[in-house]
Length: 117
Picture 1 (cartoon, rainbow, N blue to C red):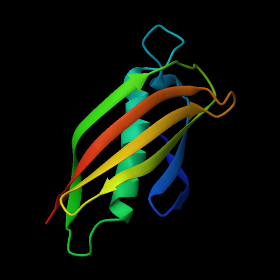
Picture 2 (cartoon, helix red, strand yellow):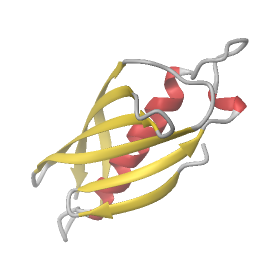
Picture 3 (cartoon, rainbow, N blue to C red):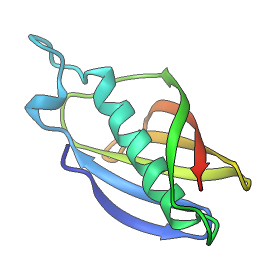
């Protein structure tokens, strides 16, 4: 997918994904929705892995929801995830996908991670 981590802090992480032809819908000059989901879910997952309880063996996404607000056909997407809940058995993360060049919000995303022991 071409996702690279940009920055992280306690309970948050940012990643970038340059829009490439394989991110676009067939025959259209607009992002395939799954490309934005991949960025948002990946940055939530990367962030979740950084704040697991010490005895945890891993995590997995058990629920996700996306709201699409716009699209783009070129440029760079920025995904920023923020922890909403960091529990012993679940974590809840929110992510916003924005278009770097215009600053427009393109998608809102929420996911729940189950902590594996």
